[in-house]
Image (cartoon, rainbow, N blue to C red; front, side, top):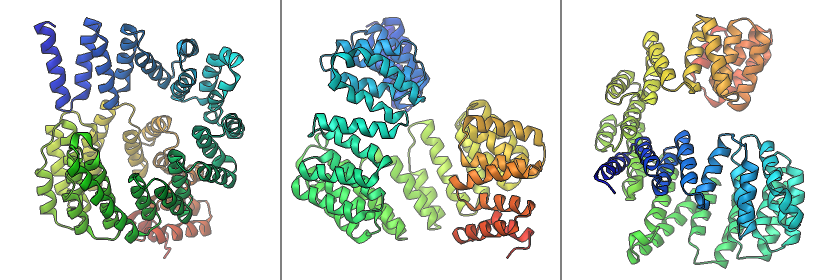
Length: 541
């Protein structure tokens, strides 16, 4: 440890403390390269993952595996990052070597499956793992079932289900096999899958993971009675598991049984408060659990329109990790109440720890002003933040959209191009500028280039599909316009999209279809300005 290295490490850690994760990770990665110290490479990898800088994380993982070739965590991280970026060369051989050297072959197979699961091409993932396990399967045929589960990722649900059944036959008490059977079966035969899972839980009542999964799936399918009956039975079997009380509250909340949910949550908070008093905070998750319950009470109060009650619940949350989120939410609720002074004071009371938090505060306050109809104050807030926080694509984007709303298209275009320069892979910026050109029926050639770029980045984004459809309408290609707008409306049945689609139908002579879709959208969003003005232009009441 030289003075120079100590200084570099301190600078890196100070950067992390300020929230500058990318800078801290980069500094640590450089130090790791200079010292070949795997601890520094691991720390750089972890920080990069937290900051979602996957390119930097990949570099750190590769170095970590290089300087610590016998560290299974380092090798697994390196392989996983390679898989996530689509790098499959040598992956099968590396996975087989890990499995061959592992004492617990089943665990190693599961880890290998998780690694290839990060590949975007699921059939390629299956082929990689297939090659890695070919020799093992000849020696240990009973171990092939985790590998065969990759058929699921390759979109072969029926075959995956067959193999899940075989896995359960090999080990009828395997909770993992029962979980697979439920998940795959829901895609093939939902009724049979649910019945099988319920039978397994009845046979093995201490099965908590499958039970929790089954509760979730029943609730997702709208079977709240079944979900509640199951979670209540689980609570009777394991009364010491207080998490199930929270789960029961969640199901009641989703079912719209708000009074029952509130009663359960308040009891849960009482229990967690008692736990917190009897245990050291550092050794207990009681504070976080109570905070989760209060956050759900906030959602319930908002759903009931009791915003003052929601604010009161937020004020009672004392979990340090949630402080920033809670105060911003509190300011937003003041804004919804129309108390802009309290909203601004709440935002100003928060001390940001990083440029990212400064940006969030500015955008939150601007959003509050915008929703209150004070576009002037929203622009003033973001313009100031755009100067204070250098190169924030998020601030520039939000400010650009406000300028567009105000009719200042020159400033809108300038900022959108700055966003594109900062984030060349940001589809939203291309889409926003391209749509604006198409909507104004100007510079259509440039609009086409911008929208093609946006579509190449996010081909299934309903907002982009709507923009492309609107551009095609402007160019007179009504058939193609209708196709894109129908795809958009199927994914995003919003009034703006309905307004565009109805106008295209009208131009095609399909006036009844236009009236039908406008009427449908009007029921959901009667005050939508775009929809109302579109109908007025065509004389439709």
